[in-house]
Image 1 (cartoon, rainbow, N blue to C red):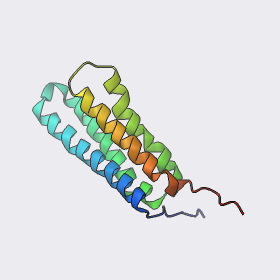
Image 2 (image 1 turned 90 degrees about the vertical axis):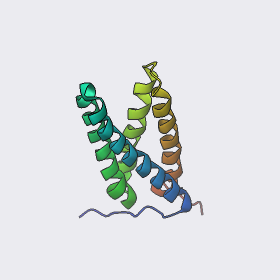
Image 3 (image 1 turned 180 degrees about the vertical axis):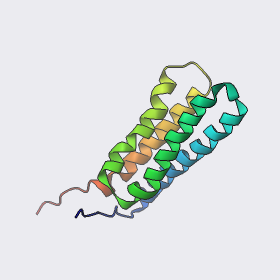
Image 4 (image 1 turned 120 degrees about the vertical axis):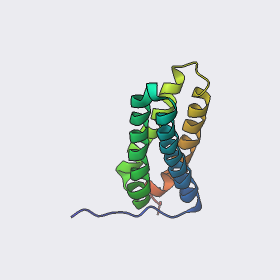
Length: 121
């Protein structure tokens, strides 16, 4: 039997978690809409929508529960937005890189809930 730890519900955790969840959910909607707007790139946008949907599910259920592995795996969302934007000169890259920066900050805000410092006696 495995034990679950609930992430501390501090204000910083809530701010970070909500920011991650909102960006991920909006990315799902954005990529689904691009699927219809730019049909030539439909496969690409469908893949991005699936990636963001998976991230949204992990964030809304497992991350909120305080599963440590969910914190680590959520960094793939940050990297998924940051890395492709570094290799293109397109105008949308700035938005993806900005979203990655906000998500990285949000991840750091949630860190204390997953890895509390050991209290010295």
